[in-house]
Length: 357
Picture 1 (cartoon, rainbow, N blue to C red):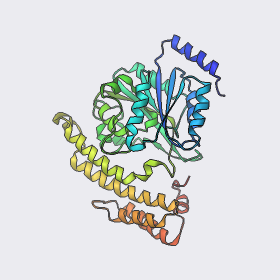
Picture 2: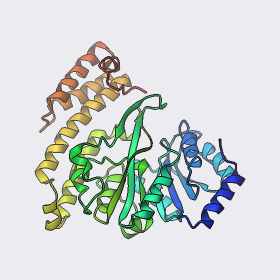
Picture 3: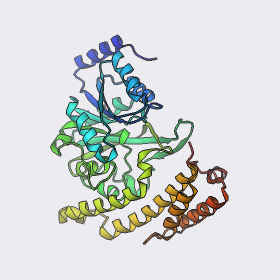
Picture 4: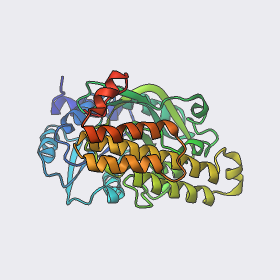
């Protein structure tokens, strides 16, 4: 049941009287009219009520702003900021605008097409209050399709060789994962304000359409992490998301970022890590090959057979690529593109998640 504005204010005042820390929720959004109400409602449903939500609308052309304003009119904890569209390659400006407007001791991230479990903030605030050595808390997320009718997978996958680094003990050890791939779903993050202030706010670099990886790289050197193995929310993956358009190019740029960050570490830190320059290059060669194969599949769903074939060919012959399974998948997709066959139907037949949602 949705709380009224009066009851929300009363509950917030009660929390303040108990000296519970304020959480500032940063919500960047763009053309999320199909999702933003559910996103905000998941915040209103939190068992922890001492929060503020700062929604920054990056020039949406749909009803996103209208929907957010309807919520903010009913609950003063929700603040709506509108700006002319600047896009994902200036995402850091959007995040830092919200950060500058925020007042909370803790900073949470919830993009406009994602949502939380009702106890997300309660669990994480309690954890960070008990563990002052941790600069952030994070946890598992359910990766779901557009309408949440299907759970595609859960992240992180908790691989044995990676799980030992989740707590970032000692600080910097999480780089053994992060210099390859970011396994932290951004919508599960709760970060100490003081840590973000020390590094000057959120970071974006190398023309990447994201802020989480470069920001987390710096945070990993500042303190330990608290990992919660319980699902904290739902992270939507669907055709049409902006980041899917730049998947392969983003991985190439992420490789450069990882190499430069690694090389800038002091020799003592480098010696503690299992990664090195050669392993980073090898990983990203394979990752880019897989990205091209996935982009081909996305384009098949969008009925762009010519574009799909181009990506599949790139995946099959990408330099340095050494993953025969993805070469085979790319060949299958390439053949399907000529005959108009349904790759998603094949995936479902084989018990694999469909990209179509």
